[in-house]
Length: 94
Image 1 (cartoon, rainbow, N blue to C red):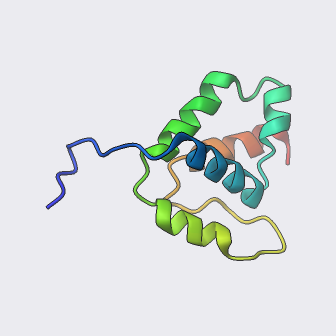
Image 2 (cartoon, rainbow, N blue to C red):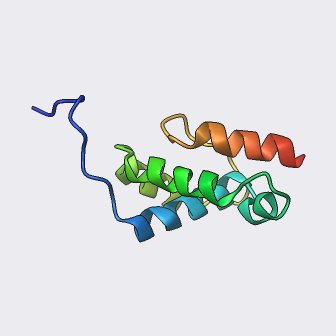
């Protein structure tokens, strides 16, 4: 049985970097523009990747991202970066 209080191993940094990038695109979150305007600094970006690395929803996330969509969609509830993506979209005026 898995003990929820015991830390689980973090996922691969590169893999989760790309998952965060893909989630940003899928949800219409322009992380490049956010970084350029100072809304997303390096520390916040690294924190998003670290949160993703610790997420238990990774397999489902990949499946969600692999579903073809013609337009952006809301960030899924299980995403640990949901609040960050929504805040970046709100503050960027998109």
